Amino acid sequence: MAVAPTLKRTLTLRSLVLFGLAYMTPLIVLGIFGVVAETTGGASASAYLVALIAMLFTASSYGRMAAAYPVAGSAYTYVRRTIDSRVGFLVGWAVLLDYLFLPMVIWLIGAAYLEAQFPGVPGWVWIIGFILVTTLLNVLGIKVADRTNYVLMAFQVLVIIVFVGLSIGSIVAEQGASGLISASPFANPTATFSGVTAGAAIAAYSFLGFDAVTTFTEETIEPRKTVPRAILLIALIGGVIFVLVSYTTQLVHPGGHFTDSSSAAFDIALKIGGNVFGAIFIAGLVIAQFASGLAAQASASRLLFAMGRDGALPRAVFGRISERFRSPVINIVLIGVVGLVALFLNVATSTSFINFGAFVAFTMVNVSVIVYYFRRRREGTRLNPVIYLVLPVIAAVITSYLLTQLDINAIVLGLSWLAVGVIVLAFVTKGFRKLPPELDYSEAEPVEGSPSLVQE
Image (cartoon, rainbow, N blue to C red; front, top):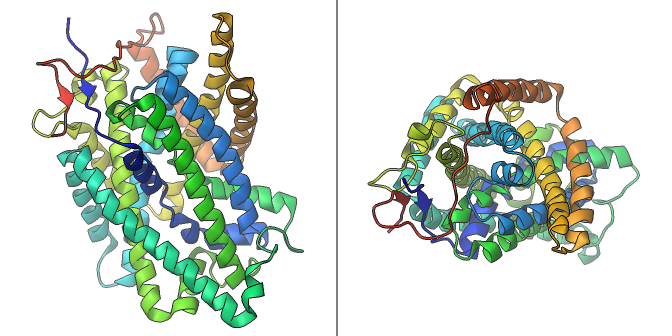
């Protein structure tokens, strides 16, 4: 009997948290600050606070499922194990929309920053450069990408600290120390409830990726404890950064009116730090995009590996690992090829691709926890009803609402993608006459002679 490919456990809590934060890209709060502030009428901190609460509830659900099923696959695995393998396949298919295109969007945004800074260099040069370097690092293995993330995250955090510090200095210089304490970034005469909730829907996009570390479950030491902790820490740390940065930035520039909301944070960086810090800020944004792309491509390749190993996707292609690099090279390269689509798209169009799958996954993982609670209860196991029932219900309602607030083009694209998924599912299950294939996952180390993603 053939032994299924398995992954070697090398990642610690610190590694997972850094991967998750890199995927989220903390600097994204400044990248979309103007849009959120404009939508909320100058109450961007309030929008991020609402989004943080919603994401913490959902993070709790991911943690419960990661502890119950410590294998790669994320929402795809959790739904198929708790609800139905066919529903799980469709959720995994929806998540692919997010995972496959998110690296492309990240690389495109990074290239846009560089093209603005160096107009003499065509944007396609930067896009291809991002893809080649990121793909090479991920092919070399998870440990190489892990070490690279430490350096990239350190610089990104440094830029955030300097930005907040300069903001505080600017506020104190203009208003005195008392100017640092204000309720206006949370509530002011121009802010409305509908505006804050709409802003929270936008701000929630900044949290996309806190769940990505679940795809590294089989490479994590003591995953039943480490992964749930990492998920909550990523959402919490990211949320605190978002609230703090949006609060201080909003104090520097009260209200929601900007010359150009899409570049508002850069204009503020020039105001508080001059041209030198403006250049550093742009460098930080580009490096943040590179770190995020590194983590996003790695996560996407692991999801494809999990689905290929199950036979939900062709096993001979997606379920293979390189004997030399012990990484899913074909999947990594495929993500890079998909990234080339960025050569023909703009940022606005490409970002509409990634939201549908993320919110479908969030909602269904919350539903999975609810189903898991009642299943274990029927089996005689009592679980905490607050953690396994109340919080997931609240989170499912919120994420479902956010799903309905997506741009109509994103919804149409997402539904069309799901329709293709149904066709693929029909093919895999021979006209729905059998369940999608599923392998017997094991937490054991790979036995001698079996292929595995071992990183020496």
